[in-house]
Length: 192
Length: 201
Image (cartoon, rainbow over the protein chains, first blue to last red):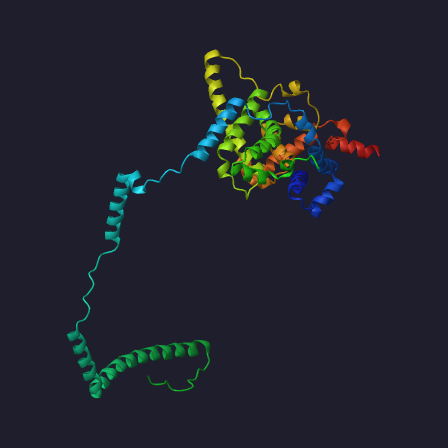
């Protein structure tokens, strides 16, 4: 197992150029087969590179240029690319009118389903503005009425707070009884 | 006055840029630089030297037609080998289909594409040993040591993952070390051999 892993690491080190991990180095020193592989791998790469030119030199020579027929075809291809004026691009709509129309219909239907079109309310007229100003003035000029409305709002909040306070007190009582401790209230609740 | 040719000193990428701009001479220089390299890369996969030469020329033709698509941010060799690889795969598939048809009709065996190369060239040495490992292993070795490509570049050329390339390289190296001539100091000892050697000391 360690041999397999070591050989893989030796091979990998050849590609990454990194040093072998210490555990592998130790193993390579002890294991003859892996040690041989490590040495051979290092010299193999240099030998492959060194013999590259000799290997290429053994290739049977063939025409250095391209073969005349291919060369002519190549010239024609190249000239055609260079000489051909840029084709005017057809508008994309003209290429596939039916799929484009179908897509647009589907998109419009999806839009209608997903977003209901709600007509906007008309902007307030001058008369509406005058009426609104008058109502505001009435409200501010009648402090009793305003105070009454505020008191009403506060009383409901106060009721809510009292309910919460009761719950907290009940929880504290339970904790005192359960844990045998005394919890004191520091100060009275602030009024809203 | 010196007699050297400045075009020979230009990098592949510079030549490719010039070829893209329309320089025929730059392209010919690239073809000259790479024709043998492509040949040795493609030969083990194809049936004969002639097929390999045709494939090299087809690759250059394809490259010339598509030179506008070359991105100088990448190495020219990576692009070239990728194109060659794709062409070779296409050609191999077509040839295999044609052979299937003819084998069905004639009932003859299909010859091994790599067979005969050693006899024809009389080649020896580490690369010839590498060629006997099989087309895939030979190709990764060539790209790694013949073309000095990184694992990532080889993966791009072959259309495989980096891990697959690493595994191929590992197997190719270990097989090659095992196949090289022991007289040249390239043998891998077996466990028993190592033990015997240790006992003899």
